[in-house]
Image 1 (cartoon, protein in one colour):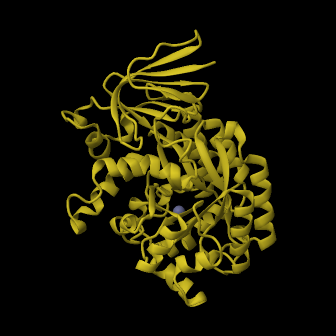
Image 2 (spheres, helix red, strand yellow):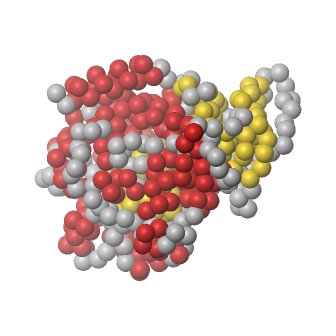
Image 3 (tube, helix red, strand yellow):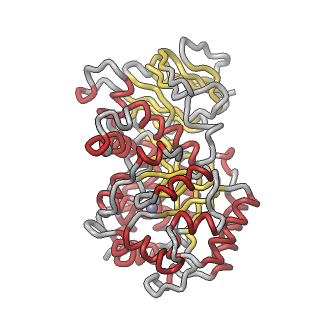
Length: 439
Ligand SMILES: [Zn+2]
């Protein structure tokens, strides 16, 4: 029996009644056993994390990232989505080998964990997805990963990324068998058709069938960019979300990244099917894609999560920065009460957990859930003085304020130090691989 005690913080439980309590959060063998008040260890096998001056809360859950793209940080600035993909990102992904893929994965997971993100929904590239799973496994992060599926006969896709429909399905099935449920169910698989323009109808239809049969999630992009929705309209004569629905891809286990250019009908359809939208505000601003109308999505009943997308379109994987942007972005149009702090903190935790299909396991600090817990130091000058931990987390805390992190009851960051990977090696490998790829 192994006990971990986050001792003496202000606890944002993010439980259904949004309780804020003082005291300890304790986990035993990975599961939360105690929230609030003081906890006495039951055995001699325990570790205590001092949380004085900290807000203790569930780890951030980012429901749309591309850890594989991290080596292209700063290499694709100031482009719109389709140019960004065709000119830099697809050639970069086509040039990756397992060593570089692993370096990208480790860099991303290290940045995410040190910044308080404990779980991700991650779209890898067409090849070498085992290397991304390996990096996630070593880092200790909770990750649902899928290989990017791209079988469209599109001359703009580099030969290194093109694949047959059968290869795409076979490789997904192999990865699912190898990794889904691995590392005490910390790693899971999700089908990841990249977006409608990069996939054939046959592939998309088959993904819907196989994901349902195997009870795993679907992770895709839709309605991010005007050029992208024009391509979909040209091919189907219909809107993107309608196409996904008619091909059988929209359900409660589906997470759609972006959802910026949507009709009222598409919003209603997402809500009716119980599909999730993951909003990525930095990426949407930087690629000049637009701003997803979150107040309208939420009013329509759509479940919303938050993600950083990738390092070359953000250019960080900083969950706190995204959380703050989501909180601020809608106020000029809708009014200052749009998306208040507690609502946004809930989206970044519970909302993400729901998008990963794990609302019953993570996303809040409740007895019985898995021990994905972070302690955020709120004593730095930029967070004091304040009367509200919600305000501190939504508006003033930064990812560098994260002091301790546990995933599945294992301490992975202690006093701002990553315990699972050697940061010096992560930095050196990432730099060497990037220099090789972008010579
Ligand atoms: Zn993306």
